[in-house]
Image (cartoon, one colour):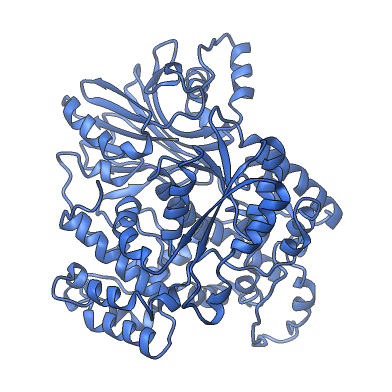
Length: 632
């Protein structure tokens, strides 16, 4: 619900208010309602406010605890703040506002930084201890709210967005080539570095402490996903009933606000389920759908427009429904603005997210999202069944790594970069990065098909979902809109991790029987498209949403770019990527780009993800390396 930034000079050197204000102004779009600053010699905290809870000045930040010990800037929402406030009142703390921020500062006063681990919500927090002169940074367990930092040994700078950090007078701009290599392998970053050399994303469920003696930033991880201990005695009916109860609780819990709340509504089950419950809590809930001009779309993309199913549900739930229709020409206008806001390049064609959040922001300040249901309840069965018959950890890694090279596979990466860049890049590093996602958690096992599916769920919720959340935050906050994710509720997530995979994937038992367990050689199967994902969630939601939606085949939310890149946008792609002014040509081999574009347009090889990423990186270079102005 806000943007935060801060500076801590470990050497005691005073920081200037003018520089702190300049940094905060870079993220003014995140908080258009108010601003606040705390500056005391070598420590500065800044806040840009989007007022959601207690919109009065009593909820303004930076906020100080009653005992004067803690000063906090905070971005997010703590959904269990009322329960924690009552607990703190019993300990003698008093409150003058109805804001969750006040619970944070008084909670720090009562319990110290361990209070972060008790929050049910989304948050990025900067907390200064005035007595010990220590700065704490912390981020929510699911990574909904972003927080970045840069540390050069004498100064630590942090912010909700990188564009604020790079305004620091001492920051020097350079490209992290390892991050670039990672991005063009996975269309994502599985580490916590960024394309901005030296700028690090604080990992989810992490707290760091920095004082004048710090020589590096040590991450303290206090929570992680765990699918390794399912309750195998759980019946399907028990799983369905409790999933239904906890989901309803989560939606209602996340509707807390002193401003209007709406919901995104696609044609799918997850957003439909959120809308079903939310519409019971709000008269004429506002819902928002993004559709596409399909006049020149062919093939599988002809079904990408979800407006009809969304309209069916909007009518069913009697919502006040709004639609945004996009066409091929919208990408030219939106792409530079999108990259400016996104800065930390991540997954997929995300410009529809920008448009739909812009639409929603005209009517509400908070919008509920269905993101997270797939990752928790097994919504991508074709991915899991691709590796569930692995024989060992190494076999699992080999199969899954091949699947997740979304952009440029290992065998082609030598052609991707220019000669000068290729010499500086470790071609083996993406594989190492991929494996470290798993080896970080020593509880993972690789002995049975269920283990491989559990490991797949763990990987995707740690990486793919992390990218989706980052994109969601950036493009909604670009429009002064807060997104919330009921599936990412502490109680619901804890329960989903206990639900056995046999209840999530209906075909599992039969598929396991096909594995030849009497030989070390694995049967190689021809994998088909499975539609049995989220089995228990589908059954749990039957009482809430129309049967047509429950039975609908899974499809992602995406624009029909495969067709558009061969049509109206083909000229724009060439104009952007294949001319003498292409800035990214210092990094990316233009002969390779030309081959990719030609194959897509003329040979009908689907390179839409890679072309999208080429265009994103080109605009990233123009904006952040060349200083091109694209946003006013």
